[in-house]
Image (cartoon, rainbow, N blue to C red; front, side):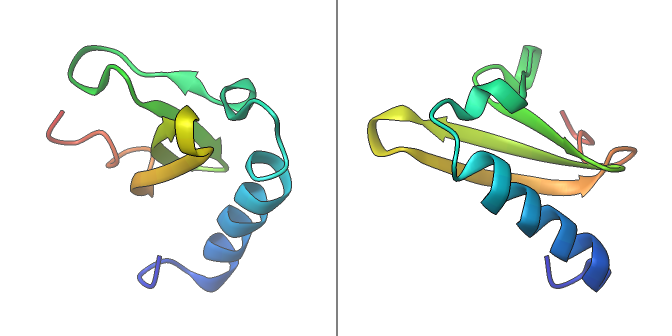
Length: 76
């Protein structure tokens, strides 16, 4: 996140804190991914995408990849 514009980073952190961290079901706000990324979930925050692993047994949403929507899926 250090490479992102401060306002974008703040928007992403706000989204994670206000929506995901307070939700009983973090999948409610995301979309499941398919093919090479099956098992992971995607959150949309403006023009950015967060690729996440939702670990139910620990109530953890681990952000694996973060990037602009035009680049975040690259290599997969």
